[in-house]
Length: 203
Image (cartoon, rainbow, N blue to C red):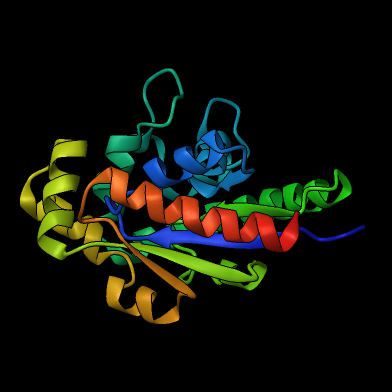
């Protein structure tokens, strides 16, 4: 079995990862998304629900047993130790699912794929990647986007941003840095150029 060439995509919250991966999928690329996997394992009957209940109690669930994501966010973004507890539950489950999907892609003959992980470096999942792309932007623009997207106060947006590795450090570790505080057309043009290079190398 050939292992696909894996390109990790990361960046800070609000840096444009979703728009970038949607564009890559539109061009026919395979994208594995850690956020999608995380939502799956915390959805109804998800395998992370019982450990979350044991760790955080019924206060982060609705009366009918559905995970209250907003209530959970309030807990973990106000207490770093609680955030680490949640990460310790979810990250190993998500990583196992992704490793299985990379293996399946290899069996299916996929030459390369993208692995989108917000906490790529923080979780050590960059070890699964052959190269990494970091989407980055100025902090003021990042705060503005997060406030608007998630309907948060400035303080709430900053708490979410500060819970992640600084973008400067992610840029330092990445193979490629893609600036996203410009037009989406400009970002897409750069992504398209990088994608064409991958196709030449691995297809």
